[in-house]
Length: 441
Length: 122
Image (cartoon, rainbow over the protein chains, first blue to last red):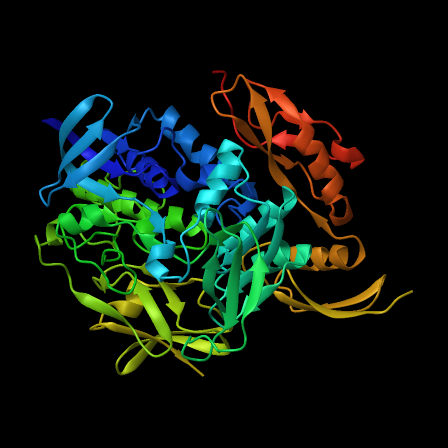
């Protein structure tokens, strides 16, 4: 049995950011396990630019962004196991790993799950019609074009207007394909507004809102897709059908956090986010197992993924090292004489009672679909991430403790596609008994 | 001079500010932008819109078949097609370092095409 202080599962942006932060916070013995042959995860195929505006105040492409973290991981000599899959994680943080070195048994003091997402497939959304070749998920097509150099098709229809779908509409157009339509079942797009502009409007690609695909035609290869308008209950309206002759259908119909390992380890899962429930330290219901990035909740921006992962890295370090670490400097907040420096906003490790999380809850209220973290201690500053249920304008996001309003923030545009982050201070939450987050006029 | 009167969405950052722009070149009225970058984008967008182009170029003798690239600065929107045609024909030999100039003055835009990742030799 190999012993490690910290194992980070997944070498995408979240895993990289978490590992770097844990090392900066004093954890020496870190192992990162990555299924692919290189670090960087999905960023490697996201060759478009616009990453990093929040964190670095500059627009980078995906590979450039990843390299910032990969270089740090390399210079810190953080051990990485590539081409390796974790097949089991137990609640005592024992891992079984299938690796080029053979089957490994690893015992970790703490584990950070940064396993990302999978794309929703045709089977999961049940599109009727035949089963020809030429139906791809948008991310799969992105991999083919950007990493392998293959064009998936020439005449394309895209179902779903998530960001990956929009980005691929532009990418395929630039590479000479004809994107005939982007079809979205909702009355609004699920992508960032700026991607609608720079990926669709720039290239005059039509976006069909409140439409879906009712049939895929073709025997060997996709020959056409039939779309139709849908009513408020998402049922297709007879007589509104429209046929597009095409050879390829791309699906950009959502991402599902990958949490098989977490579930097997007994981690509590939030049915709305499909990710683990966590407290403000990104700790799951199993002590010492942390979760961050897209496997915790689907993010729109990699910067927020990394910030979340850094939080997990920092608190995993605290858990391993058994005393608080300064969140700002990343230097262990302990004086030369062994006394703790005043990191008053943070709990001491001794406060932590095994298996009984401080279970003050955050709850999504009216107009809010999801809130992360789901638990909080009331003893520290923290940020909540939320998504609204439907688009609206000029409303307040209100965080309340049943009786009193803790925080109220006015927003001009509220869009389910755009995650909202609110910072709460210890002072604001310390005497609360649970927080309700809702939309109000 | 032609009158400008319309709405646009700023694409500089994920905020995607909805901007209202009116007037004529030289005396534009811009509303709804949250920052200076949004103002500059709007002025540019109604006169000579520009975009950064990202794509990939074939690599010979590399550990992977493609190197991702971008125009170092934005290029006029009207030139995107020409630039893409040049990028499609390009080949580069490994090793490639991030930031290497792959094509100088791509499509006569005055802007270089640079690598956005590293590709080692096979």
